[in-house]
Amino acid sequence: MRVAYLSHPSGLLHEMGPGHPECPERLAAIHDRLVQRGLMDQLICESAPKVSEEQILRAHTQAYWEELRHAAPHQGYHMLDADTAMNSHSLEAALHAAGAAVRAVDLVCAGAVDRAFCAVRPPGHHALSYQAMGFCMLNNVAIAVRHAMAKYGLERVALIDFDVHHGNGSEEILAGDPGVLMLSTFQSPLYPGSGDQPLADNMINVALPPYSDGSVMRQAVKDHWWPAMRAFAPQLIVVSAGFDAHRADDLAQLGWIDADYAWLSQEITMMANIFCEGRIVSSLEGGYDLGALARCTELHVQALLDD
Picture 1 (spheres, rainbow, N blue to C red):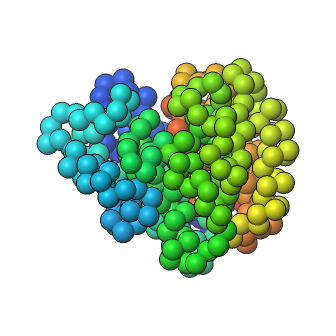
Picture 2 (tube, one colour):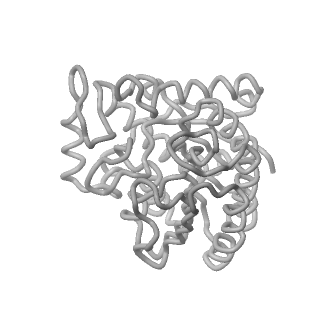
């Protein structure tokens, strides 16, 4: 498979203060692992462009975009919420992170590549249409989904979110859209305290209990994701790839291991091969233990490369 790898140096300059788990070292760990394992040589690497205002406004309100645009400080930090800060580079990083997802859609939908992985930060799936939240400023995947539908006329796009935290922003933006099917697993109870009651019928939310292991996730995929996918038959799969359900990650209490991420990534590629000619756009969300993040991202990218 031809797989694009999109990133941007601004993602290494955005940081939210000493000791913050969503740190620049996350991208460095992923890059170094892919180089070490020889995968980077198999990828088609591109520097991510900036997202446009038109693309942003398909998922976010004008008022929020204006607020975010003027929030970046010249020095120090500006707090957007209790967990999310901006430094002088953060807006640039957010624009390139969302731009990576949009460019990935362009590459995949135009047939230049089969699949794409966006190694970007800040992540996006907690960003609501009207506010920043949970380390997220722009909702990268929701922008990508809306771009695929607006520019390429896709009528059915599936969004898969396997971050340990519920993608409440993605759900808020996309709930009730008949052209979108969102499939997610997440720990509950856990931040942001949502997801147990889906906002609309196009949301297939599977809450996983704390301290459950990967076998519970695998059964959920078989019981809930596959039937929904068969009924929906997407033309493109977009992925919120969060690696923080790993047992080594301190921000949650699930017990997934490396093999679970390999299995899940292979299931997603199987879905794509069956329903949408293999087309996948995947974008990094969470994952805060650097070793587990690097290893599991490698397994995810390897699955994207495989037929």
